[in-house]
Amino acid sequence: MNDPANFAPVENLETLPGWFQLLAMVVNAGFGAAIARSRNVPVFGTILAGLLVGFGGGIFRDMMLGLEPVAISIWYYLPAGILGAAIGALFFSKIVAMDTLGLVINGAVLGLLVTIGAQKALDYDAPYVSAIFLGVITASFGGLLADAMTGHRATVAKQAHWVGMALVFGTTIFVVISAGFKELMSPTIAFWIATVVAVIVTSFLRTRSQKHNWNSVRWPGESLDAA
Image 1 (cartoon, rainbow, N blue to C red):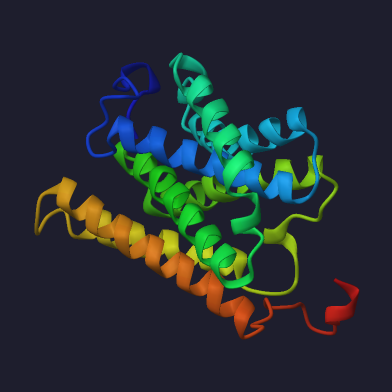
Image 2: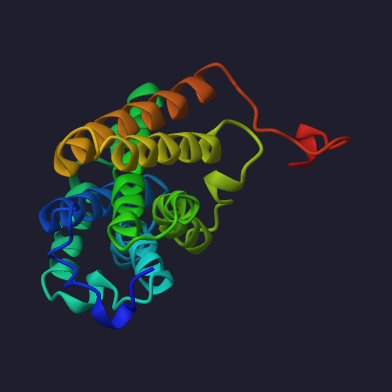
């Protein structure tokens, strides 16, 4: 792996565009704030939950890579996140609370975070397994914090439905396409193809697992009622 001291500036990565990283984080901040408002969280808590969902996983990812977190080091990330959270809370709280549409949106925004988590790890020459891990962490860590803050059990830790599995499958497919196909085509083209596929797969599994009640894998002898 590269020496962290020689890492390129975060906005000039080999494949991951800075604007796309910002967009993914801001969109997720809006989604997190919308969910928080649908749970009747007050204004300050709603904005904070949005920032945690949008930026929490990315901050953790950058720390794991030995980098200064992009959400802290670049001045416009936090203002953009606050704006995204405010827009999400004001206009989308009722939409994300809808059954099927809310699930599709949830899967799509998780898929966006998967891509920026895994691709940044790949751009810094992290092993493929580590890239998959960081993709999953980027998509789930902020939500874990926001769920804890609002007094809810983290969705990814619940027994029912394939939230965690959707993240793992989506991230794995992203890494396979983005890293494996870059020898066959431009790395940038491979990244965008991988992004579209990962978002579709993550959203599909997130939606279908809940609509068809696909329960998460349980330990032997463990009942679903105990979850």
